[in-house]
Image (cartoon, rainbow, N blue to C red; front, side, top):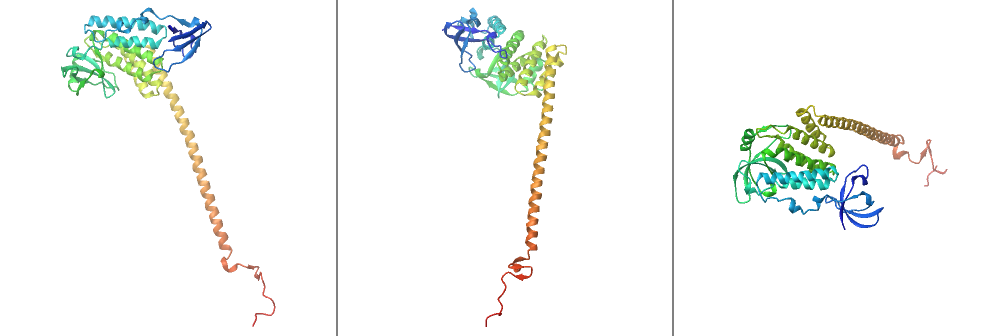
Length: 359
């Protein structure tokens, strides 16, 4: 009945991911029955050795409500303190390769920036979801209770822009006005805490990638990239932006989007030509694209051969049918028609008896 952690070295070499489990029976230390507690997959019973089970960290046994005071205060000091504490705990779990547990702490840390809409100051930058896409927005005026009217600041995915505040606000005022409900709000961007926000989103993307959740990883990396692009007079967070582009490139590779993966990898290399990780990802993407092109050419060649064979077979059948039809027609013509029926070599098959016709 105790919740413990199944160490990563107990899993298959290809998986190497730790996870939380519920101990069901422990009569035999060589065969302990446990139940997987992965919230993103179906429950699964496993039989493991007792030596592979580890106790949870002390902070994991705390009530989550004691760790996160979401929306309780908008004081920056309180928000940052909570987020930093949760981030450090998530990092510890990440090192233990318990990515499912780590990402929960990163998300709790991000939730600490989700203060009530009415408490976010005017002029603040927020991250919102509109039409299933992440956008940066500036809080321009207050609407009805529980909502804000904001000007969306749209960024092009096709290029990387390092924007300062004046440029961002100018772009926002040219954008469209939308009403944002709490469900659309994804966080208040405190300028001085951009690095923390980027780190949390990037760490969440790493966890999602390790767990095979590529779509979630793309969203998390995109959120980090959006935040990192803003320049609040302190310079853009280039390192965080490169990291988010690299992570998003890997996520696109995992789901087969090689053209988008190439775009992100090239942007990362352009920002930091000296970054080995960016160069490595770029080389990997180029190799994958070259391999896919070879496979496409091979497939096209095979399809071409099959098509030629099919056409050749069709033409052969067509010629055979035409020849058979012509032969049949020729046979009918050489037979002389119905007038010759009953004759053979000019003689009657049934000759008339002598005596001629009857009178």
